[in-house]
Image (cartoon, rainbow over all chains, first blue to last red; front, side, top):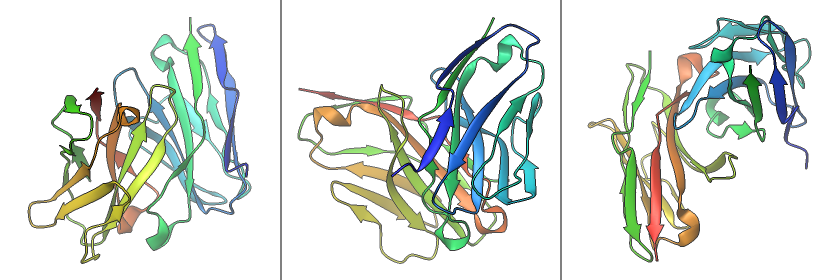
Length: 114
Length: 115
C-alpha cells in the first residue's frame, strides 16, 4: 500500500541551488497537487494538475516549476532556492470530479534553505 | 475564489467531553466539497470526514461529525468523547466543482485534550 510517496523526506540547500522534490502515486488518481506548510500555518497550494499534461498555478507558484508527463508522477522543481522557501512540502492526490472529497497526502518533505 | 476561515487558533477540552471546531467558508459555486484533516505532532495529514454540498445528511465517521449549515456557510467539526490522542492541529478545507483540483485550506485549530 504505497499510496503517495515523496522523496526526499529532508533536504538542506544553499541559497541559489536547485532541486526537485519527487512525488509518485500508485492509485491512478487524476488530480495531484503540491502544498507548502510554514510553521503554525495552514497549507498553501503551489501548483496542481488535473491530469497528465495539464498543470496550473496555485496560490504561491513563484519560484517553483512542475510538470506532469505521467499520471503517476508530479515532481516539484525549485529553480533557485531562497531562504523564504524553507518549509514543509506536501504532495497530494485525489480521484477528481465528485470523488475529490479525500486528498491522499504524502508524508511531507522538510526543506531548509540556508 | 474560495476561502476557508477557522477563527479558533487554539482550543482546550477535557478528556471524554465533546468539542466543536469552527469552520466557515466562502464560495459562489453551488457544487463543492468540505473536509477536515487532522495533523498530529508527527506531521502527517490524516483525513477525517467529508461533506458534499448536495448531501442532505450531516456526515459522520465514528466520533467525528460535520455540522453542515449551508445557509450560514459553516462546516463545524464535532468530536465526541475526546481522547488524549485527539490532541493535534485540525484543518478545514474545501474544493469547488468548477475547479476541483484546487483545494483551499484554513489556517487550522490546535486542539489540546486535558486528562
